Length: 589
Image 1 (tube, rainbow, N blue to C red):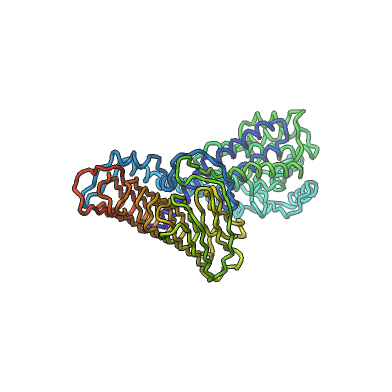
Image 2 (cartoon, rainbow, N blue to C red):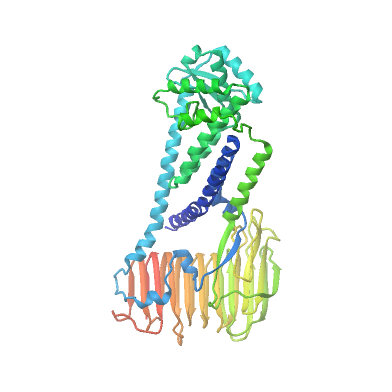
C-alpha cells in the first residue's frame, strides 16, 4: 500500500535523525553539563532540559527550515540508490544475474533482507514509543487518582504556603492536600500545581513544615512537573538510546539539588536542612502510587551525595538568571538548527550529469492557468536536467539543436500570481529547467546549477512541463508528484519520480526509479547497450526490447514473467536490473 510505504519512509527519515543527529545533541548536552559541575545546579538543569528538547526537535526542525547543503564526494550515486539504500552498481548486479522463468518469483536473500529491515525497525521503534508513553500515562492517571482521593489540608498549611510563595515570587494559586498512604510530600500538576502531604505531616514541627513547603514550592516555581513530562516524552522518542535515559536521571538529580539551593537561599541552615532530609528519607516506605510524574521530596540517587552537596560550603547556589536562560536557549539553537538542516549533497565526478557553473538564468513568472513558452540553442551531447515539484513532465525529441520548453500552470484555489516561476539555467554542459515557487513557511524553493531542487511543501502550483530536446542528449528528470514520459532519447536517461507513472524509451544507459506507480521501459532499436536499472517500491515494471542483456529481476511481493526469452542467462554487453517491492515484473524481448 502506498500509504504504508510513505509512513515507513517518514519513520525511516525520523529514525535516522534520532539516531545520528539526536545522538550528537545528547552527547553535546551531557558534555556541557559535566563541564558545568562547579556551577549552579539550576544552570546544569537548564542545560539538560534544553538538551532533551533539542534532541526531540531535531527531526522536525529539518522539515520546517530550508536545508543547508554540504557537498560530499559520491561517485556514480544513482537516484534509485537514495530511495532503496542500494550500494551495489548496476554492472555488479548484472554479473551474477540469473534469468527468471515465467511464473517464478526471483529474489535474493540479501535484497529481501534489506527491504524487510526498514519496516521492521520502524515498527519496533513505534512499539517502544507506545510502550513508554503508556507508562507515562499510567503515572499521570495515578497522580490524578492521588489528588482526587486526597483531603484538604488544615488552614495552617494554606497560610504557610501563601507566605512562602510570596517570598519566592510565585503568584499562582497552589492547593495543599493530605493523603494517608503517602510517606513523603509531593508536588503534582503540570499546569495546576498542588502539594500533597502525608497525613503524618500534621505532627511535624514548624521548622520541618516550613522547609518542606519551601522545597515543594520551589518545584512549582520552576515548573518541574511540566519539565518531567517533557523528559518523559524525550525518553519515549529515544527509548532505544541509553544517553537519553541517563540525561533524564541526571535531570532529576539536578532538579532536587536546585530546589535544595532555593531552600538554603531562604536562610535555612545547611546542617538543619540536611538533618530534616535524612529524617524524611528514613520514613519512606513502599507506596502503591506510581510517582513517575509526581515530584517527591524523597532523595533521588544516593542520599549521601545529596547531603554532601547541601553541606558543601563553597558550592554555588544561585538561581537561573535571564541571561543564563537566554544563553542556554541560544546555545541549543546554535547546535540544533545547523545539525537538523544540514543535508549532504552527493556529487559525481564522472557522471554525465555532473554539476557545472551557470552561464545565464531565465526566470519567468507563471500565473494560474497561464502557458509559457521558451526556446534556446543546445549542443548535441549536452546534459538536460528537468525538475518539477508537482506536475507532469513530457520529453520528446526534435531534429533541431534547440531546447523547447512549454510550461502550463494549473489554476487552483490557493494559487497566488507571484508564487510560481519557471527557471531555466544554461550551463557549460547543458541546461536545467525547473518550476519553483515561494512557500511562506520555507521561503523559495531553489533551481540551482549544482542540481538541488529544494525541499518544500506543494500547494496549487502544479506545472505541466512539455520539453523537446535533440535526440542525442543526456536527460535527467525529477518529479515530486506527477507522471513522467521520456521518448526517443539516444543519450543516457535518469528518472526519479516520487508519485506517478514513468514511461521511458531510451537507447543508452537508463536508471528509472518510481516510488509508486507503473514503470514502463522500452529499449530503442540500435541501442548502444548501456546498463539499465528499473526500480519501483509499489506498482509494476514492464520492460521491452531487452534481448541480449543480462537480467536481474527482483519482485518482493509479486511475480516475474518472461515472454519470448529462453530460460537461460542472457549474455550481452550490459545488464538490466529490475527491482520491485510489491507488484509484478513483465519482461519481453
